[in-house]
Amino acid sequence: MRVAIATFSVIPDGGAEAALLRGELAGLGVEAVAVPWDDAGTDWTAFDLVVVRSTWDYTERREEFLEWAAGVPRLRNAAPVLRWNTDKTYLRELAGAGVPVVPTLWDPADLPSDWDEYVIKPSVSCGSRDTARWRRGDEDRARAHLRRLRDEDRTVMVQPYLSAIDTEGETALLFCDGEFSHAARKAAILAPGAGVPDRPIGGDTVPVEATPEQLAVAREVLAHAPGDLLYARVDLVPGPDGSPVLLELELTEPNLFLDHDPGAAARYAKAIAARL
Image 1 (cartoon, one colour):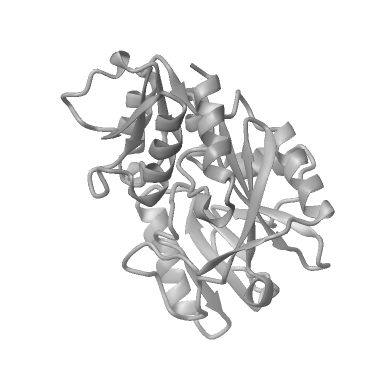
Image 2 (cartoon, rainbow, N blue to C red; image 1 turned 90 degrees about the vertical axis):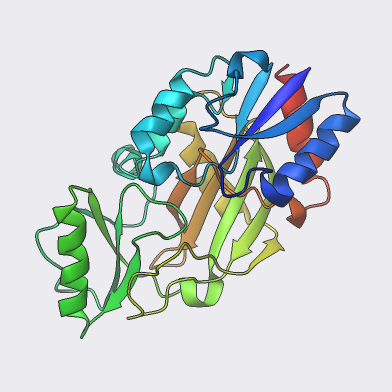
């Protein structure tokens, strides 16, 4: 049995997480190879399963990426899930269903006048691309950021910056085949007034224990997600009252932090093998 781990050309081998999966799958008698998703010479029908992993350039070529996904017969997560999840407007849908989500202004004409700090970002983005944290006094630069995204015909999101992120960070809850696997906490990554980064950024990450309240919110989020999910990452932050709220639901190409739990890679490999 052969599995393709879909990557992108900058990291054609898929990096450390792909190596962990390949090793665990080999122990289960499954051959796994890393292949950039846009490799023109690859016959994707030759694989028994294709697992989307580090396809981290999709934001610049989303329609091309989704067209590729629709043409892969045995893809996880599946193409309809990827289409729904690669535009963060899904947060509006989840909020409408009653899921606790970070408050969001969609395509506002101007900056919020009653927020001391806020984040501006496009709805199609990953790795904090084109995302910045602004505060009072930054209005000229923040308006220029907002105007640029609007001029590029991108859906703009403006969210209050929740101050507890600076002390507690973001908590990522990882799920495998619908079951909770492990959790990790990522430090704050956006500095106030620093502007839009010129490259994707990420905070240091450490393993943590998920709280019952976080698990309850994460399961509520997943109950409203579409499709059969091989993997899922639910990113939560403390809301104004300290209760967890959804920052992002990652069903496309999230880092699964497999090195943060000694059994995580084996769990995901077994789930992949079971799909065969």
